[in-house]
Image 1: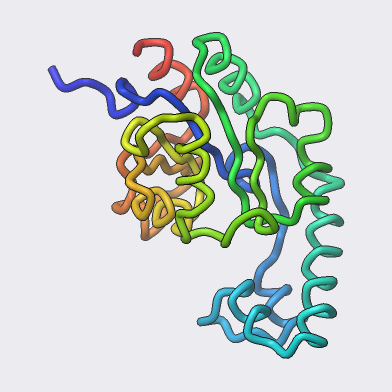
Image 2: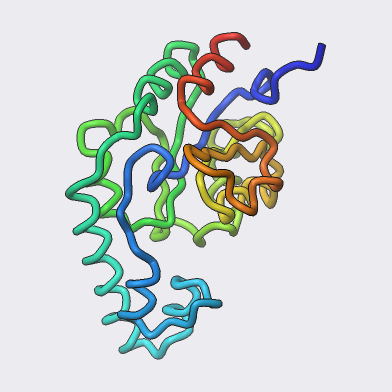
Length: 198
């Protein structure tokens, strides 16, 4: 009998928006506000602007993220899973492309559940694996002993780039990039059951 992909995992790193908490960010709208082409990553687009334009572009993004953060709610089963992981003595962290102020607002009274919490201000944004590898080093665990959990292709790419298990949260239809995941789940109850069985 083949063991579950999570069976050997000793620590879990999570994306935030759309993975642990709800998000209504409309990236088509945001690209329009920034005049960013559809084929270019928004953060890369801003990084390529002249310095004075970067300041105003970053303000547009951060104001939009903060607006979204005020309405964010925990996704069903996510908080229960995090607490179950803690009960088993498994560390949890967050790596997000979000801004620090929006991240703090979204987590509110739950920030103590995660250590560390790394935003795009702390490390190069995903799919760059730097933030994930920093956490592996901090936890003194080999990347292969860790899982990164997210809902978007950048999350899967970051996990692969770091040598970690790539877990995809797909609550509705499977996205076209789902084949890049090592494990796919649609509800956090599945995740909790898998961890409890391990």
